[in-house]
Length: 222
Ligand code: ADP
Ligand code: MG
View 1: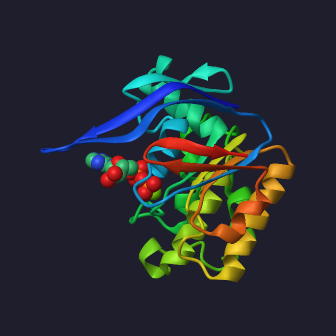
View 2: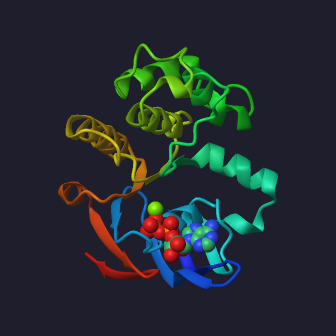
View 3: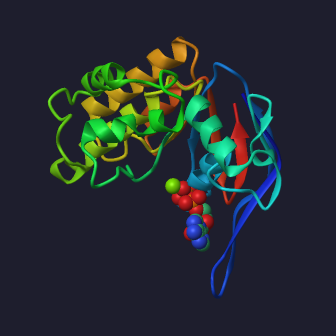
């Protein structure tokens, strides 16, 4: 599903060079459920965004489903992502001027009519994340945790083969956290490959593999 070949990402600020992901190789097979943990600043968000084609690596190659993401044009990559990859951002990143339902439908707008998820699917997903009555609200009318649940639903709209989720349960109570993880497990059993970043030690055992990231390098793979 994902193949990383000597992928590296360094950020340059005015006074520093920060190595976020050191040259890293590895692969994630179709059907896996991988949890990534590691300290704040370890490079987890950068790694996930490299896997999803959101951050361009300084070096190396990122292949998803056999496709070299950076051999595509911007428009092709946007379509590829919309069709195959669901992404839950660490900060929900909803569009403030769109309602919850409209936010949910955004991924469909990158695909030809009929290919992405529709309104019915969006409403079903809202129900599954426990927000059946929030379709017409604006993001600011939701709590942080509720916004995160909308972001989870949005990531699943187009039935992606690959779900990348960056601390999707960070601001949630235990019960909602469990509901989100159950939803991911259900999608995983239906064939979706899941890669999730978490700080929650209790969640690690639900995954089929655990990667610990430290200073941009994978330190343990079990
Ligand atoms: P994590 O998600 O594990 O907390 P990140 O991938 O967000 O880690 O960040 C990895 C490192 O890269 C950190 O040292 C962080 O400060 C740095 N970093 C992240 N984004 C930027 C950026 N846009 N500019 C400069 N440094 C950044
Ligand atoms: Mg992060």
